[in-house]
Length: 104
Image (cartoon, rainbow, N blue to C red; front, side, top):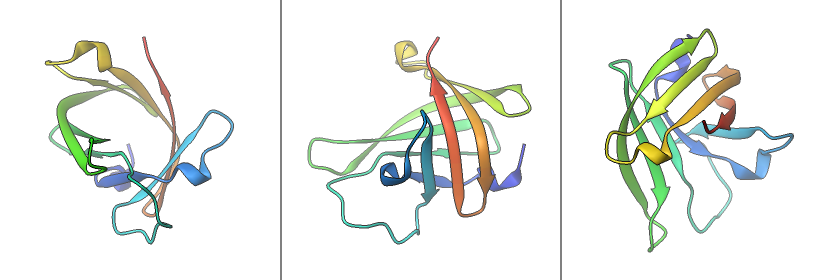
């Protein structure tokens, strides 16, 4: 797993395509938007999902992750098991993350 993955990623939905989602680091210069979701992967296997709240501010949902294979993770939430998903890493570097998100 690339060490570049361990940071706060924000959805750059303008760049999405072909079933893939694109994320950028939180300090990226995004165009104006009403709100952006994202997530943070930590080396200690903690996962933080940032969703857009009712006032367009992020809300955090804490979860965990585990490796399924070299480019796929399972993300799960103890309090909201129905929101668990798989995250396939298609491409990554320090400034760019492209994923495919699937649900079981």
